[in-house]
Length: 406
Ligand code: HEM
Image (cartoon, rainbow, N blue to C red; front, side, top):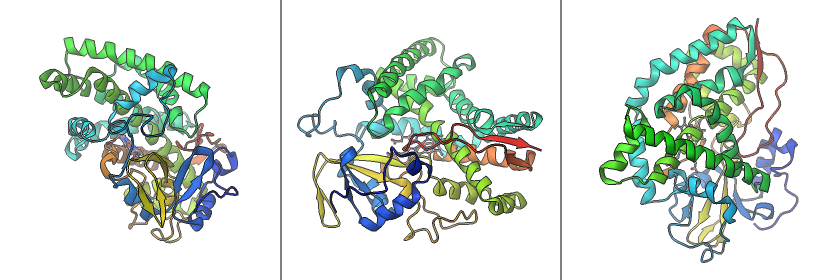
């Protein structure tokens, strides 16, 4: 299918961002692949296709391992954006094999189920402290008081970022992540470039300091890998650290507040969860499905690919709609219903294929720790004011979530 102009899918419309799921249902009805002129992309809304394409090696997060910009029919980014691209393009998320494989293998040692299991007491203890403070205050902003400090502290601790420097992480990350929205503006790019320069400079200095005095943190581990047989370049170390710091908290913060906002809107489900805390694991999966924290991921077409009779040529870009895949009735019966007991839940929120979220076990641990602490210590937690949604489409979140503990 090609070129419909009357779609309800409109990532710049606040009404769409408030609730994109009905528009996704319409898209799924249109077909398996829909040409979308405003972003020059092909939209893919069905679960089976999103899931298969994430694993398809004819697509890539980058094309630069195989083609030059012009050869691929694209223009090079403006030189003024260079610091952002240098940083971004050397992180594993924007690399393809063999570079991706080499870096992912090194980093994945820090995220094995066993390593994450060892973090459990620390993560649970921190979640308890944060929730205890919220309860003492009779409430507050669940985002600022619990959802954000927990994953920021955990990933900063893993990388060995000194406590005094952690305040910068969120603003740097937010500025850089602006570039992952559709058609970012020049202003967004300028902010991302500034943050990339500062964040890279900060890490370059930290790496130099750690080289002199190694610790048992992940940055020291990356330095050791670099120094032993040059398995990581200096730029790759910086890009890996930034990727981990950003990816290590952005989506978890949003998943936490989107999840609680969904619970407050579904009081019977919240009551069931309060009555039976053993539902926490399925509740977390269902909340990530129900209001998907990262709505869309893009792939370049490296070799022509046919979808439902339409040939998508090399050089085109495909937009995989995770939020839509997670509401596809072909996979999830009654998808608009929040069902915390849903056990057959193959949601795609952590992606699939070679870029499958390396931090998924850690994210699950953090989400379970904050949810359990809130259920136990704040059984009367209630919404204090209607939250404002962030205007962003791709990274789906709230400005804050005002709560009270009566
Ligand atoms: C609820 C929380 C999280 C969600 C929803 C999430 C989601 C995702 C998704 C969808 C991708 C792949 C994107 C693609 O296929 O193009 C990804 C990759 C990644 N995530 Fe997460 N993530 C979360 C938490 C974390 C955490 C806590 C970390 C900790 C370090 C992390 C680190 C990464 C990294 C390094 C990658 C790149 C993997 C690769 O390219 O091989 N994420 N994440």
